[in-house]
Amino acid sequence: MRRLETSDNPNIAVLVDMLREISSKTEPLEIMAAFGPGYASIRPYDLLMSVSVRGMEPGTYKITRSFTPDSVPRSHEAEDYPNPWRDWDTIPVQRGGFVGEVLELGLPQIIHGLDVNDDPVVGGLLADLGSCEVMPAWDGGEPLNWMLRFRKDPNGYTLKELEEDLLVTNLFGGATRNMIALKQVKRLHDQLRDQFEQIAAIQQSLLPKRLPSTGGIEIGTSYLTSDQAGGDYYDFFQFPDGTLGVLIADVSGHGPAAATVMAMFRAILHCYESNDYSPDSVLNFVNERIVKTGLDGSFITAFYVLVDPETGTLTYSRCGHNPPRVRRGDGSIFSLESDGTVPLGLFTPLEARAAAAKLMPGDTVVLYTDGITEAFNSGREMFDVGRLDEAIKNSDGSPDSIIESIHASLYAFTHSRMRDDDQTIVAFRYKGG
View 1 (tube, rainbow, N blue to C red):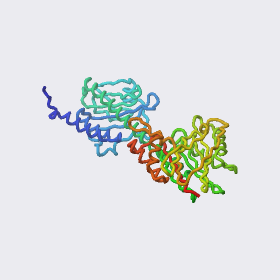
View 2 (spheres, rainbow, N blue to C red):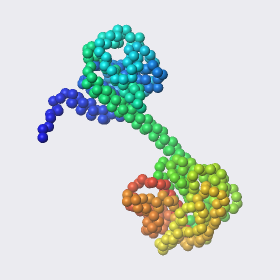
View 3 (spheres, helix red, strand yellow):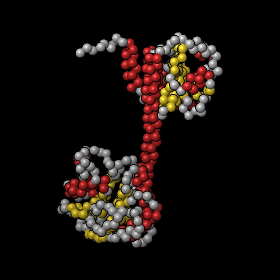
View 4 (cartoon, rainbow, N blue to C red):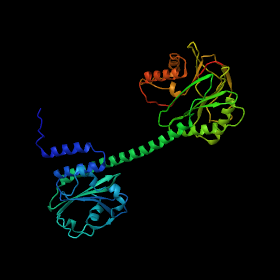
């Protein structure tokens, strides 16, 4: 095996330094400022001119840059580099002249014996130059940008140089376009993130500001979204007779669209004015209004329960939602089942029905959304109800302890703080009248 020595080749050394510097840049102008001087030392020129016809009428063009070797900015002077993206509207539109002639052909060219003393566009700039290498850079199949390199030597360029320079020009042009596209994507991403954060802030403001104060009931809540905004929702309602209403809901999907539907759901819910505040009446009312809005594929699962803090009596209705879990004082777990209906927003009439149950002192009811039970680990196993029950059982039975135990079990299962879906828990313990 024989290794060729490259360290003594000055061109390779220049290319290594140039490419290393380019790889550290994040701005198109910085890349161009790093590329220009390095490549010029390998491919000397006396005048460099870049031209663009992007978005221009046929026969017109703009000269976006024009440098001699002594005037090209170095990498640390990138801010002084002409910026056609920023200054496009102020760059004059040109027509005709030597540049217009070579662009009209639409192909790479070498021009020897150049004799242009007084050009109608660039004046005497080309008077002392004897040859030109013309290189189009294609974008979308069209030569939209051009690089013209001039030398004083009337026979200054070879076809071999044109081959290599044409390839480099187009590769560099592609890299620059990709960098510009990435900048645009980042800018749009930042704008969307700002909007999502605004939606999330509005959504958070729609949740209860404080937990209701009820002597016979102890309450805990947790609300975690998968994105900046989510589709889960919970709420509390206190009635004149002392009854406490507890609601949990889950809009299909997640993100800003789900958050918007959730906000609409809350607005409709808070418009309910009937004296009949039984869960089935409330949910039938909400469903009718939501169907009329035409959610176009979205739906909402919900569970609404009324609890009497004095007696521990529960009255509840379930619309497509997971049945809550109930933890007895002895640590046993059972499901608060009922004849539920389909989710809200699909059709009318819904015909939600109410069911009843009675809690014993020390019983805790755990309402949750399916982001809890449908969380997956790296092996694509689901957390499921069994692990949820185990987490509830391993707590001391208080709402806060149950929520902490569920979070700990989820993390031990998924090994991740990221969530594929919104995760909401509302737990309340009946302390006894």
